[in-house]
Length: 92
Image (cartoon, rainbow, N blue to C red; front, side, top):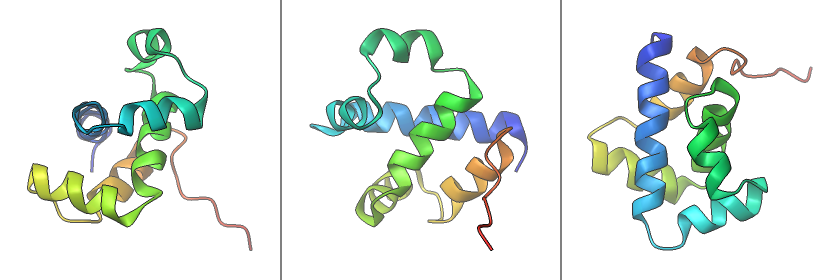
């Protein structure tokens, strides 16, 4: 996946989170971000990685988003890896 496609997918995920009752509030609470931060930083790679990390924290979120967008369930993970700074960390 190319960076531009990955960032577009992350923005779709942010829009989906905002459309689901309570999920945007949960994202803001978990990350400490404000609505103003979302407006200001939504196009920044680090912020988009945070969106994808929040989405991928629960299988139900991944499934709901991917089903709504017609994507396979690994698409958010591939998108995260394609965004600068988003490569999976190996702790071994």
